Image (cartoon, rainbow, N blue to C red):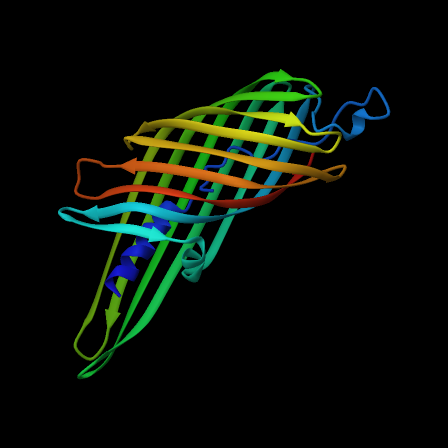
Length: 268
């Protein structure tokens, strides 16, 4: 049970969209000037544009975490992570005025593991509950925009908050422990999008930085398709790495990667 509880804590701290996902899609609206331009994925640079992007990230986890002189190696597939999943929310909002970008990403996840352990004097129940919030606000600027390419630059912060609790109850034990960790990293990066016809596009994105963590970076790519005037669907892959080693005993050095799927609603 100890290894599973440690895995839950490590997975929760790691799973993030969180995000930390700088907009896996781009607004699908364009300013038409010919019969084919309404289907182009390149939006107009004029005025306000707001996209709402719910998504799911099915990530596996590899790395290590520990407190003091105790550490554990973490190796979990996306399926193993889902076994502990209880509640969660992942989504991003991308606001843009002309070429100025205001992207924002939020991820909240709760993992729960409850086991009953048989003992000589009865049965002991051990419950582990872990919550994680990742919030990534940023500002940026659209460097290039035409019918074939879009290039964005971005700078922001990635805020991590995690809370864990472990309780055991039974005929010979009744104990509980909990703890929290918070840190903020500055990250900078961007996104490049290329049109693959009138409705489809491919995009690659990434950022890197640090601050409280020694390193905090991600890379990814998505393939998108506009299915309606205000709706786009996309799927791809994301890789996120963080190495958090503060002066206090706790440390967390984990890489997570997996498939992501999402949709974009172009509100304006």
